[in-house]
Length: 327
Image (tube, rainbow, N blue to C red; front, side, top):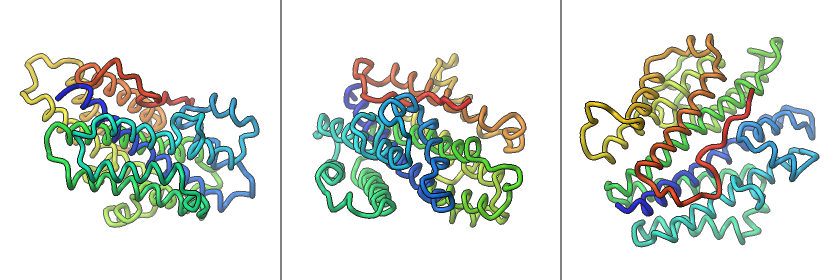
């Protein structure tokens, strides 16, 4: 496969996954805002910190209102990571390789793009409905891809981009709540605290699966363990890392050499680290710091994949993953 084609397939899925996950970020805050004083920025500004775009946001919106945050993350033309721009970049990559992807994939991506560009009726819906429709449109694209694309290298690079983006954004959704929005000690375990954790699970598409697999109260440790370490939930970090390792083995097309290179070492060590650890150890050592290290590993993994398989000269409008700026 041409590296140019692999690069476009990889990034199409990263952009679509990123658009879907940003909608989940905003939904978390929409739900939390219902329990906060009107106009409060408490559940909103941490989203900007978590995406690593605080400097750009402050330059564009000095007032930093909740409406500014939603505009910045969803529609702002000046924000390369906004939902509208992510879909635009995905469509442009798809346009360049239309002979490789299926007609159904192109039509779905094209439909999402023009809906976001020209359909004012769509934008006049309540915010929750807009975000829900964006998420469903992205999920429909995944379903069409899985149902119509042959399981050759095209599908493998598509899955690889989706999995790396999903692993990163799962950690960010968790980090926003666990580190930045953790309530005061008096509120831990209270009604508001539980409602926020339920909102987090729902926005990660994890609430029902968490309830089925964990017969226990909804508390920070249990939620963190599920989203980070569950081996069968498709949005958990461990599940994504296992599938990334499988995909890389298929893409390589040969056994791992006796002396593995940097890509094999990093992918294998990262998977082992998150497969053989306990949530108690992560919390004791600092969950935020562990998530920070994982995001760094995912960034490095992307860089090695790009060096090995993708077009190095193809500079994308947004980085593979914004640096985490939480301290």
